[in-house]
Image: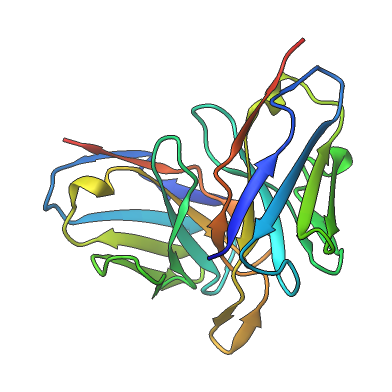
Length: 126
Length: 106
């Protein structure tokens, strides 16, 4: 059974960089796409970005200038860095795996999100 | 960017009711549409993928339909454990979620 676990500081000061790591167990990080998603308290889900195990990335345009996602296949981990944070970045941060899917006759590696971490609350405050 | 709009934003229903939630994409996304259920304090759970495929382990009272820009999630007979928030998500172009539909007990 694949399991994902987010880790990192729960409190970050304004203007600093938020750093989180997602550790994958029970399966390999190879051959999959992996995403970060966040959810401000009481609000909906916002996709932050994804990374392929090879290192290629794609980010939400609204966050692109501040986001870096990286992967370490030797540790079965991928990471998120979000710079210049403000109170608006306070949220529960989730990591998740994309399930490869066939849609019609097309194979999609970046399919739905089938495994999620439990989430970690990051508060931005001085 | 593709925008996803769900309706209604909230819904009150009773156990045993048939419920339908709608999701509309700002442009055609073929069948690249997924549905999730989220309960308070928990991560979202995948219910339906590719518009109409039931994820393993999900009860058959959940079903999805649609293609192009208009999609629906239907719960045929609400159970107590179904009261939650539901999100649609497109995987046609990167990733985007709808704003959510909160399903409450009437």
